[in-house]
Length: 302
Image (cartoon, rainbow, N blue to C red; front, side, top):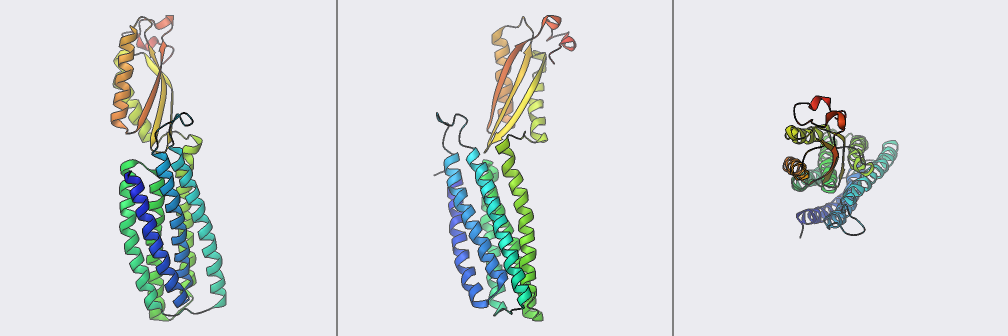
């Protein structure tokens, strides 16, 4: 089984266990912050399920209907997961505001903060595993899932600290205030995730650092061609796509030009994993037919 699929399944198991635990403690204590954390974990579970199926689909090879592969399923997954986080955060803010206005007190805060700290520890190790596999496989779906769990770590710690302060001070209004603060924090993270996942769907170019690596790979063999232009980049899942026009002297043998293109493609693949390159060969015009060479500066196609 694909490593990404195994890791996504681990996230489903951990989130399911935490939801049950948080719901039981939330009902017993009547803490809106713990119940908000249960809702947060429910959204995490939904995200984990989406992530699980998206990485399974995206790992399929290209076929007749999807000649560029299935990588964008991961990007769609990231967008859906961010929408789920937005929805959960708004719900938490509404419920916490109602509790703040009502002034209702919670039950045992001791049990509450112990469960929250336990939840933070579990999610820390699971999210660490998810991030490791996501970075290794450049998986946006697993990165999104890891982000969910990492925010859950922070929010669980926040709730735990809030309940601990209630236990010390008996100021029960801290419970809904902490819940609102957590929801605002999650909203910020959701916005960042949405941008990261949405950009590949509209074919935003690769990062400046990645483009710099690409141009360096092209320039490494600059002694054999006149210039390049129409460089375009995009990403689909963990796949990077690069295409460009490479200009050669009009009298260069096709095999030599083709060998240079192969060297450039190999250099890019070594520098950036999961990169597919398409190079269009162009012949230099009459004003620079001998460029390549000493008169490269005269090439109008550069």
